[in-house]
Amino acid sequence: MNEYEMPQPPSSLLEQEAPGLFGSLKRSCSCPEELALLCDSYELSVKHRGKEEVGFTRKEGVSYNPRPARIGAILIKHYPTNSLSAIQRGILACASELPQRYQRSVISILNPSPACSEEELAIAATLCLDDLRHLHLRSDKDEVIEKLKSRAKTMINFMNEHEALKDLYTILSAAVQRYER
Figure: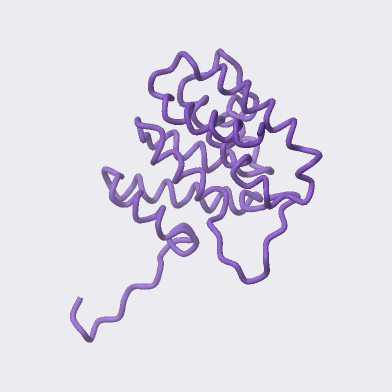
């Protein structure tokens, strides 16, 4: 860019709200269509309450990464397959009012079991990890801590046999231990 060119404004909501994640995705996507699909998924999630965090209290004016962006970033960093599907489904799983036609892709993530695929377990563990990492922001922390710890321990048990989930397993285990002290 020469000195007379103006920088391009962000072209998507994802780029505007989570430029770090957008940059990571731009570098890791194999074609522009993949990046566009993830940007569209982010917008869909946000449109259907993906950024809402019930029970959270945040200071006015303090910037933060929205939950769908945090989930995408954790998956990129800690789930080695770094698949388009995992990132897309993780972003969509944040939406509390996802349209029916998209719900099938996230239902097993929101209700994990040992029968879940490795990808589904990775996304469920990531959601659980994010909940624990942000527990300090919840106004209802005392009411939900035991439920969150129990859910995390269940996830840890499900993940134990999956080598690709070793990093998430370690991080989630450490998060639980932090709250058991």
